Length: 131
Image (cartoon, rainbow, N blue to C red; front, side):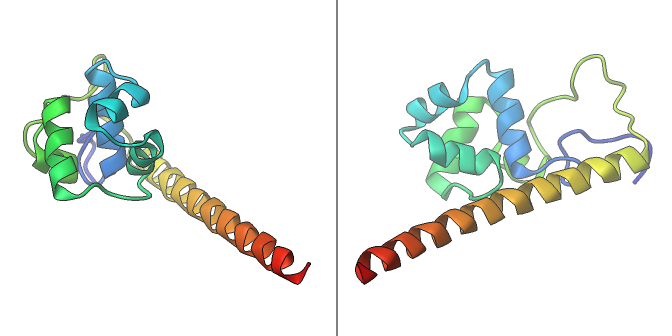
């Protein structure tokens, strides 16, 4: 990667990162955006945490509400947000790599937490059947 970072490009941000950034730039909290889209808060949180993705119709609605293109939400290319103010857009490669590793680890932890919750639910159900 060169020394100029595309803040919202595919190497620096995930789909969920772009949703969260565009939502914040639009001055909306998660609850407000979820309500305006007619979805559950947990659904939006899943999108922002890269645990799930919206269907095409919701993606189109999301782009419209956030005033960005669908292409930008998906890839970071096209009409979207500029780099955060006060930032020259430069990050050393080692810092960027660390940020990417943190993001990947965060996703793994969230996925493991979801799996643990499902396993606990299954175990409780099995224990009920045994009783």
